[in-house]
Amino acid sequence: MTAPKISFEFFPPQTIEASFRLWDTVQTLAPLDPRFVSVTYGAGGTTRDLTREAVAALHKSSGLRVAAHLTCVNATRDETLGIARDFAAAGVRDIVALRGDPPKGTGAFVPHADGFANSVDLISALRTAGDFTIRVGAYPDTHPEAASAAADIDWLKAKLDAGADEALTQFFFEAETFFRFRDACDKAGIDAARITPGILPIENWKGASRFARNCGTVIPQWLEDAFETALRDGREDLLATAVCAELCSDLIDGGVERLHFYTLNRPELTRDVCHALGVTPRVSLKNVA
Image (cartoon, rainbow, N blue to C red; front, side, top):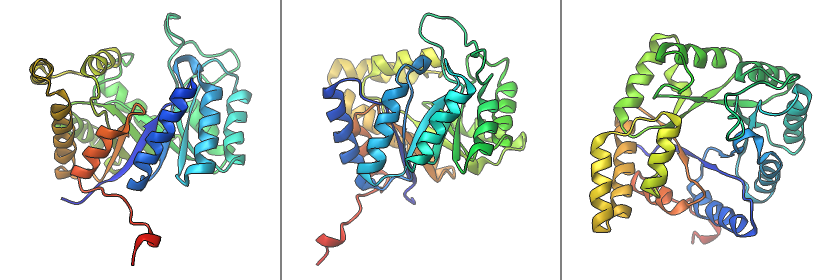
C-alpha cells in the first residue's frame, strides 16, 4: 500500500490553554509533512479574528502551508475580500471557501445585504481577486439543505467550475459511501482526482455521533454497536484507531491518494492512524550521520 498524501484541519484557540493545545497539535503532526493545514471559522463567523491570528501565527512559525477558512456569513463583500487580501499580504494564498453556517439559534442562512449570496459567488470573486488556491466542501452524504443528492453534486460542480481547485469532503464512516459519491461525481463530469476524502478520527464517540447527526452523516448500525460494546469494555481507543485505519486503508485500496484529517486539535489518534498507513515523520538532515 502506497502511503497517502495527507492534510490536517485545526480550529482556532479561544483560551490560553487551547493555544497551547493547538501548538502541541502542530508540533505532533508537522513532522508528517502534510500538503497543507487548514484553520476553521466558527458558526456565524464567530472566530473570524481568531482564525486570522492563528493562520498568521502558523504561517510565520510552523513552516507549513496554511489554508484559511473564509465564509460568506455576517460580512459584506468588501469585508470578506479584504480578509482575503490580508491573508495574501501575509503570504497565505490557500483559502477554504465556504458559505458557512449561521449563528446558532438564528435559523437558516440569510446572506448579508451587501455580502456574497453563496459559496459560488465567493469563489468567483476570489478567483478574480488574486492568485489563490481555493478549496471547497463536498458531501458524500447529501447536505441537509440540498434538494437531492443530484442537486448537491450539481452545486459541487458549479463551485469547481467557478474556480475552485479541490474539494474536501465532509467526514463519513464507510469507504463505500465515498466510492458511490465519487462515481456519481464522475458521471456528472467532475474529475474525481479533485475530490479529497475528509476523515474524522473518533476521539469521543458521543461527540462524533452528535456531530454526524447534525451534519447529515449516516451512522451505520454496526459502528453504533461496536462503540457501545467498546465503551462498556474500556476499549474505545483501540476500536477508534482500528476503525479509522481500516477506513483509510479501504479508501487507498480504492484508488484514493490524498486524505484530509479533521483533528479537533487532538493529534494522537490522527498521528497513530497516519503511522499505520505508512506516513512516517521526516528525517531531519542534522540527525543523519
